[in-house]
Amino acid sequence: MSLTVSTFQELKARLDDGTTPPLILDVREPEEWAESHLLAATNIPMGDIPRRINDIPAGEVWVHCRLGGRAGKVCDYLNKARNDLDIHWLNEPYTNAGLNNIPAN
Image (cartoon, rainbow, N blue to C red; front, top):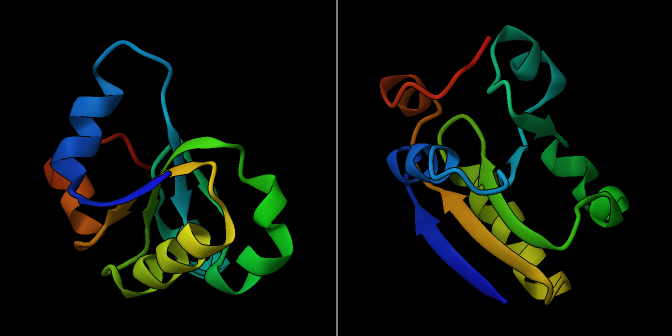
């Protein structure tokens, strides 16, 4: 479908728009996830994506990691492997989620 570079500010607006929330995919490692994660996110580490690609439902998916690099690789992979995803690459630091008041633990 599409691949768009997006921001946590845009994700916050999307989460607040009153429609069905999108899948937020956190591709960091389990240790990073345990330290802090977005409450609405699903964790599938980057290395597990090829094996778990069918766990990602068709539609809108927002992908993030700690700084943006791993998320970019996953977005590129998903964009080539699946034609039923509207992919948003959050190409900025995870800490920006907090700056935009996206709930996290």
